[in-house]
Length: 326
Image (cartoon, rainbow, N blue to C red; front, side):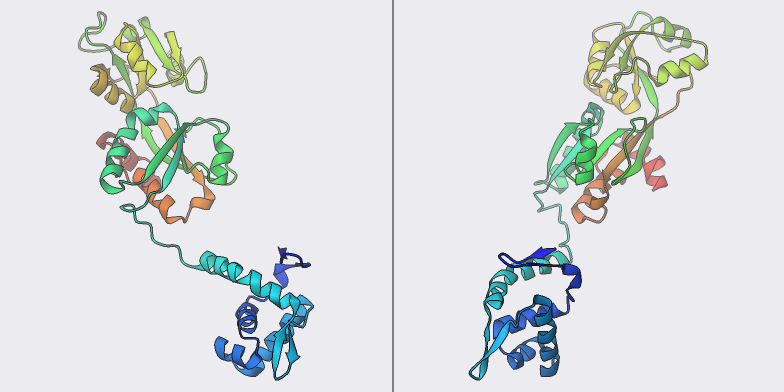
């Protein structure tokens, strides 16, 4: 329903949009003939439009006065209220302006876990600094509150593990990449020399990163299939805490390979392949359906799905994962 202030409601479904230019011309000119010239239609066509507008609004709109026509009080109200409405409609129907990352000052909101901050954020910031210097990022931790914020478009993109259940209504969900696991240990570990075997692996204390609060993980399920178990000596909710704990103890941690590579760069940890078969971790991207065709949002998502703003390690994983499935 569309309400003109102080007047009765009008069902917009009953309005023929072709009448709007005629209404605008009539209210501006106050004359059928002048309105016809303004709208580039015949006088009879404008007269027909005026008759239909009178029926729609239940008001004569223009009444004879001398040799011309005078607006009724209803017409005066319409003339005052409609210019802003017409302008709003024109902007809504106009083609969206192309997005230029070099000049845009957009703020993009990402919901994720600190895995992203540790492995992906440095390269994304480097790319933005070179190609989109005024774009801003706001990052928040993924939580149950994130899902309604995604649907509403208040969060632009979420990057999470595929195992996290997320309602699909109103959201797009796409695979981002699949990533193998790696094992990180401190330099000089007394039990590990050049290689890491399964017997040594299960004998040591482990750090478990449990974002969802579980007391086991993919490693424990894979070991159970082999009839093996491990001892989790430390469970933490953040990826950053794991390499810090490993650096200062004899604990080891099985973690996503990108985190392991970053931990080697930052903390000098050693990286080994797991000594048993372990399925790759899957990362997915979520966004609102209402953002599908938004030029800025498409550019932002493409930074990740194209791999342009990622490290060479992750870029290769995207090409084997989401890049091919999309």
